Length: 75
Image (cartoon, rainbow, N blue to C red; front, side, top):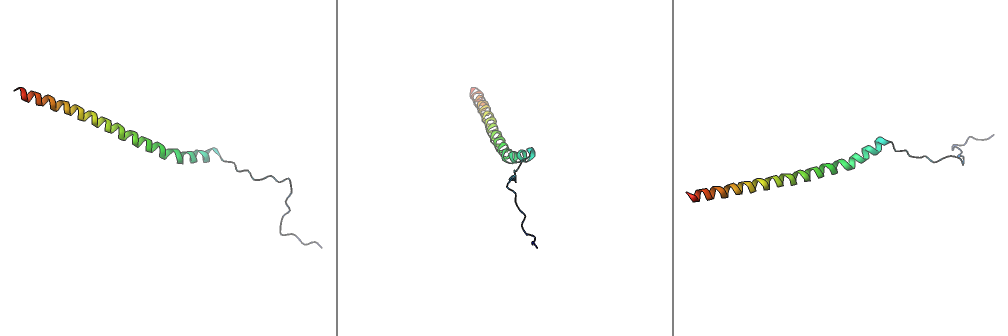
């Protein structure tokens, strides 16, 4: 009488489990990495553009101030 084994017999032709990554898993992984980078680049670009606009405003106001100063001196 043969006792049943607690372990299953493994055949030599068994193939290893291959992990398949779906398209959506890779897309989500990519977004987790890329989205914060895009936000950071957007914030940096906005700050630089705003600083440039403020510099232009200051230049215009300085020119107006000099024009007003010369007009006041002429009277």
